[in-house]
Image 1 (cartoon, helix red, strand yellow):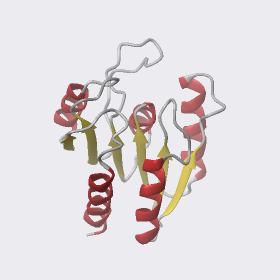
Image 2 (image 1 turned 90 degrees about the vertical axis):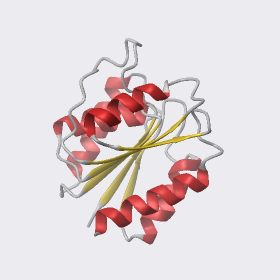
Image 3 (image 1 turned 180 degrees about the vertical axis):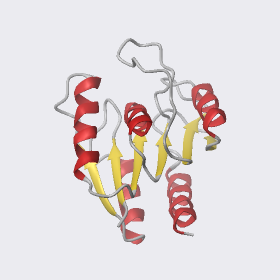
Image 4 (image 1 turned 45 degrees about the vertical axis):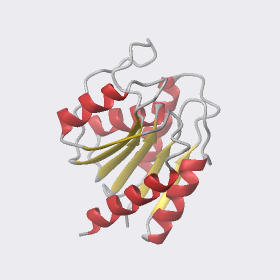
Length: 169
């Protein structure tokens, strides 16, 4: 059974709108899902340790990591260490100059990666996702939206459903 692990962004929560949308699609595909709650974590290192514990708790390597912003960063660095089936990322906070984002080398141990990023992202430059997608041969969807992707819910639904269908082939 595939387990989808959701990692929310820095100022979001484990039941945010994007996660609720994706959870329904995961359920439709008969996948189990876990939404990690980072709201009690005060540092990015605490968040990463929490994610690693959740990943290690899942008995299979049949894991799909889904992350938004800081959660996308966490998912990506986790995939540097652990083989996962795939990653689906929203405006991942990669190549950020902030001190809290200490890792800038990304070598995911998976080949199925898809990203959705807004052209008008005011927090994470879309160029960072272009750079990462090129490096990893990922599918990159650039949309007319901002960091929260609040105007792209239909695209998110369509792309995640298509992503899961592609993985099941």
